[in-house]
Length: 333
Image (cartoon, rainbow, N blue to C red; front, side, top):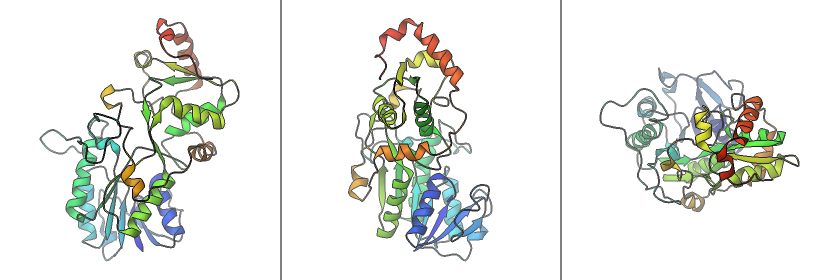
């Protein structure tokens, strides 16, 4: 197959490109040339900013297009116009962030989604508009590319080349051992998928003509279970998780930006990471064991910008003096 990947040099797109080339497909990468320009010498590289002139696509013809980097519906519409019907089977990488707060765990793909208020579509993607804009992207995809469109909705994506560093923070932090500040509620649900498994599902969907919307997610587990399983792979003896009240952390300016995979907002979104992966599994989604992802992440450099060790120590010391400290479960050994 001739496959066009829009945004194929970073993380998810890079894994899709690697899987496609390994399977013998002819791959074209549309990217700005800012990162990964030296990757995949066997692929065709087209340099363009998707927010500008997409004339480099003129005259091209592909059997499938994978869109990894659309966050506003105008980007989907502009890509469709530039392809002029020559993009083939379209795959859009969306997110479980499209959903309104789920009413119960195990929600399906037809659950209520977020909507923007009446008025112009915002030009800026923020935490508040991200999910609703992805909804509009999905609708634009079906409008322009037809009912054969494949939409995948992952949750937290992990694995090699993850420039966000969210999962990597916990792998590297637990590998250092000692008392580890664990934020929020231990039983808060979290769902992950390795980018390599997501890539394989996308490629299978392309080659089989799969259409529709699918949760590309792993089984949900509690935050405590996740950190405990990561610790079992990388942490030295004596490592302890110290669960700290979310209000205590918020009062001191800590958020999910410094303590990743912790959603510090409204508890109404507590179930967003409990999506039912059943439809995707029936369509061929396979999931590697979590320890494999943990070990491979440990070999990646840690991404800076999260909670510094000295700040963590200060917070743990202050927490130890707090009356609230006695109201949470004891640390996990």
